[in-house]
Image (tube, rainbow, N blue to C red; front, side, top):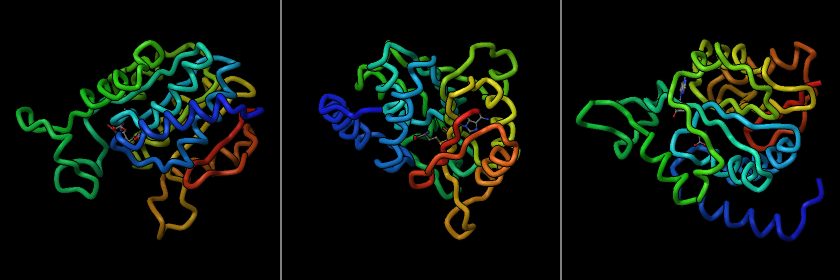
Length: 214
Ligand SMILES: C[S@@+](CC[C@H](N)C(=O)[O-])C[C@H]1O[C@@H](n2cnc3c(N)ncnc32)[C@H](O)[C@@H]1O
């Protein structure tokens, strides 16, 4: 895909907005999401698992908006295992003390409003495997960045990879070949996807793994 000066200008706006949003995505990974979604939007809609506060939705959603497509963004908004009280990635600003639970949904909605993406990003508040069971729309890009326990990543792969259309993209976040760098569940599922022979492996960006469906 040819990168035009207009695309670069639009992308720098996205980068500045993303800086203001809580999340775990590096700017170069966000840029790659934006570029892959810009490419994928020619084929159909995109979907992500793991909305959190909307950082990845900003990049993917902006590409969808510019191409008159939509991004479905799934999250139960109760936080992953590692984001619960007492765990490594717990953030008290995301804690709803009245109900004693994480609630990222208001933060996600605020991000969509500030970035003017309410007409292009469709929030789905549910467990990803529940949605996958009755999903029927072919997808041009699926980004898996939900729970990082093996059972959860495997469930996301089993539920969603089959909806990626030929030529479409399957992306995973937190791919670490070295256990010292991070948890191994996404990496194991990513390796199994490659071993299935159904995807071309494209170059990674940071910890973002990118596969293209054959
Ligand atoms: C690592 S965060 C996502 C980060 C986000 N993509 C970003 O760019 O900032 C993981 C999110 O997945 C959600 N999650 C975990 N397991 C889930 C599941 N089974 N179904 C839906 N959402 C889930 C959590 O609530 C959490 O908000």
